[in-house]
Length: 120
Length: 109
Image (cartoon, rainbow over all chains, first blue to last red; front, side, top):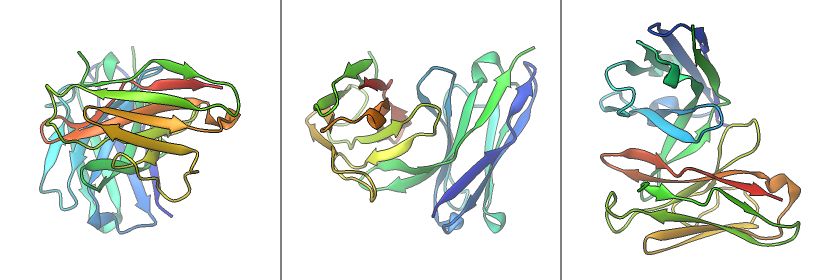
C-alpha cells in the first residue's frame, strides 16, 4: 500500500523559512514523479511544485517560483520542499502527492498533509 | 474566466442522483484533454475518484461515474449516501500550466 507521510510544518514568521519532508513507502519511490500540492484554509487545491523521478525536471507554480525549492532523495525514499521568504498567503496544508500518467498526468496518491502557518 | 469551472455546490436527498460539471476553458488548453476527479471528505486529504475522464481506481464504488464531451466533463453520483458529503475537484494537466484544479464543488446530502 502506498504511504506518504509529510512532516516539518509549523508556525513561522513572515520572511522565514521552513523545510517540509515527505517519507514514502509501499512503492518504488525512484520510479515516480512527485509533487507538492497545497490547500489554504477553506480554499481549493493549488499545485505547488513537481519533480521528475530522477530530479532532472523541476517545475514550480508562479506563486512560489524563486522562493521554494523541491528536491528528493531516492536512496531514502524522501521528498522535500524548502520554503524561503514565506508570506502569509503561503499558509496552507501542504500535501505530498504522487504523479501518475494515463493519457495525461494526475495524482493517484496523497499524504495526509502538514500545516504551515505564516504569521507574526 | 477560470481555467476549469465547477458549480460551488450541489445537493441531493439520499438515494438520488447528482451531477457535477467541470467546464474547460479551451483558451488555455488544447482541444483534447483529460479530466480527473478527486473527492475530499471533511478534514481529510483528497482521494483519486476518477482518472482519464471515465476510469475508476480499484476500491471506488460504481456509484461514481464520469464522462466527458467536448469541453465539458461531468461527475455523477448515483444512490447518494450521507458518506458522499464532501468536496469534489476536477483536474487537468497542461504542459505549461502543469496540474490545474477546478475550484471545487461541495456536495450536500
